[in-house]
Amino acid sequence: MNNELYVNNLTTRDNGLVITVGNYKGGAGKTSNSILIAYQLSKLGIKTLVTDLAPQTNVTKALLLTKSANDPHNINTVNKTIMYGVANKDFTDLPVKILDNLYLLPSFTDFQDFPKYVYQHTPKAYDEALILKPLIEPLKYNFKIILLDVPPMSKEVTENAVVASDYTFISLQTQERSLTGAENYVNDLLRYKDAYSLDIDILGILPVLQNKSGSDDKAMLDAAKQAFGADLVFRTVIPHMERIKRFDITGISNRDRFDKKVMEKYQNVTQEFLQKIYESEHS
Image 1 (tube, rainbow, N blue to C red):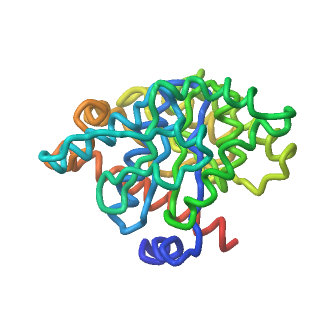
Image 2 (image 1 turned 180 degrees about the vertical axis):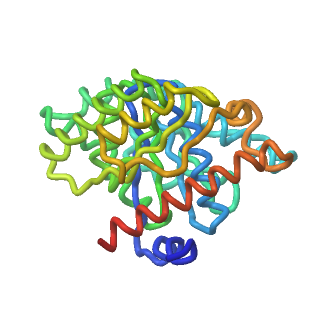
């Protein structure tokens, strides 16, 4: 088994996979993991779309900065955001090209009205989770991976994302509240899976260390393996790296040795990510 096999498994698909990046705890590294895994997937030739489902727009800001950093003559303007697409029941013309094989479905602060839209446009409670799925489904024919970045605590967004997804991927900071947030997220995932007869699996749990070194981090890693099973927890662990935070301000770059250290780590994460998809689909 090698990376070429895992990449080929995706690039030869007729339709793509939708993967929600989740955890009910804020600050668990969901946004950083979403954009950096997407960046690495694009470098492997896998056409990837990151969908920003948060009114805080952190994914949108970071990727638009990445676009500007790689094309200094470009002036970033976004005319249509995800809430526009929801209101018009069409996402197909929303993706913005960031780099080759890397696209963004952008958000704006108006997405905070999504819960209001849900309750105003659904006849019964069951339909509340079915707003995004028919809008995302057509995108699967143009993208091989669609990552959904969701806010930490939004029932309406989370259930819509889960129902639209083939997998969920959990970002876990090594602290008690993040573990509790992940456990609560998985409990709701199981509830949605039962209620909507979903064929969705947990792809894996990526640990993000709170400190560069410490016994608390090891204890939380052990607790995560006990709670979810060691096979689900990624072998690669993301250490505390200041450069990752800087990407939110400057966009993703790969210029100096600090950038390259981050990229090397996420290359390993992305290889595991692809391996887990392959093994899930060939088991």
